[in-house]
Length: 274
Image (tube, rainbow, N blue to C red):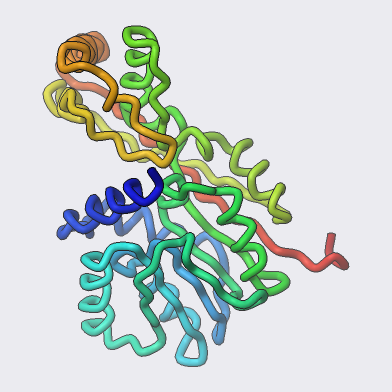
């Protein structure tokens, strides 16, 4: 299942050839603003995508510093290379790799970034364990993720449970509260966890809201996709129910889509500083 899932992830991001926009740019840049980067730092940008974070970090750490950007999508990395060349940046190295295949020596990085991609990982606690090892003492990780109440996904999950008695895994559930983020990080050894919360939500037309789920079996999640087990009739009934829920949520034909994002950072401290 995991190999199939990773193939789905790669294809999903390969199709996003126009990834950069105001939303994705601002969301990523705020990660860099969360912490202070010093000249000469070594930085890892996990799931670097089009290198928004990597390019911003590279200018702060200077020529003596280095950024390593890693992504599973060759299409994303191709866009990143074009942007890096255009920006005339020489201190960024890009690696095409799955996070589970990555290995670095212990104490390699001063800072590790990851913009909005942690929930895609199959083994989030294992990833955090690795990041802790890879960080130098006093190093920091910075990532963003969404609340478990974000988007209209909870409505789909609820209807699947009520109508079909299936548990549809929510992409945001594992890191979906500040408490969950803190517990995961502290279990890996991180200290001084900070979770900043911001609302990026907006109003959709009722039609736009209904189109957030088209009644298909597409559900990319490392914990499985029970929609594959439903009949066409069950899917059709779910879609009708989902559209009816949207109509009930609509006020003056507009629907609020909550997009609560968490900006999370934490530190690997020396025992003397605990």
